[in-house]
Length: 441
Image 1 (cartoon, rainbow, N blue to C red):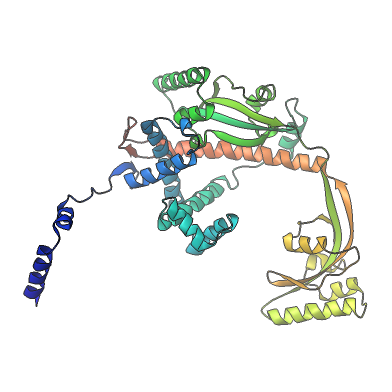
Image 2: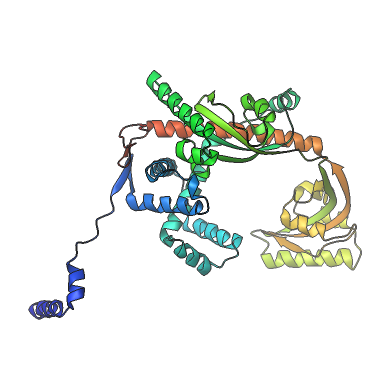
């Protein structure tokens, strides 16, 4: 049988048309090559090509912003290296992302784009994305987000004194600015030669900007920041989120102006003010006064029993006009409010969750809601009143707290990334920047 099969294959090969035979005899496609070694992992040419194509699609309407191919390739490869290092560290830290979490993220992306899952897959295919690779990239993005959360957990604390100092400082300003930046990094423990190279590079950047180069194009070409391929765009930030060394300078700038190179702990930075806008006036918010009864599902109370109990209580309140507060004290599973007759006090709409907030917004003062379910509990809510309150000072303090926290977090994670890159073994095998060794640029 084996001999017959072999003869059949030979006969079949002999019957191939000349054109098809010529195609069969052509050399096979070269294997995917390695373009970078990152510790014990590798980045392949196909992965670099796909990332390059993504950036080129992003700037399809502004191709003049992209640098020459070799420079763009170097920037994209450096981003891939940094992403790979973060994924490696996340895996080392035991951070995991389940398939169901990736599925949920993809479903959310489809929803945000008003697409079904099959339509999303089709759209990705039209843009040249392999769906399996897209899933893997999304998984890596979630891993990196969780790594950031873990690195910063407990590391960024903001005290009331810091908030007070910011709000009372002469440099504190209200309003927001839209900024972009270019960073020319200096490695940790830099030598005099490293600093000289960085200074020469930043001088070249300044010269190109003065000669009319678009700022975003310069960022894509020169910046060492992770956002270089977005043109260095930092988005809108409140003045209190701008590093204190720069805030007065930025406040005095006009849209379109660019700073001279500024020396910071991580290297040199050039800022551009794109736009500015004033802070909002009074921060008026609507507060609700309400009370509720909660009936929770437990090991002894089935979901059906909880629902039925909630409906019985609702009928006693609405039809039999029994006292809401008395029933709440006797029946509510919310121990925090039960002794107060279910009274929740005054609060902003979504303080107890969006579901309760939406129900409250649809009620009139004095009206009692039919039972509704949130997670493992059934709720009955009575709206007692509403009021408009000026929360400007409280919101200003909260914004100041978030601004200090965001600034500290950004600086801390930037330090973490620089250290991660400096301690890694990276061997770049394409472009003029090809180099090997720990922390090779």
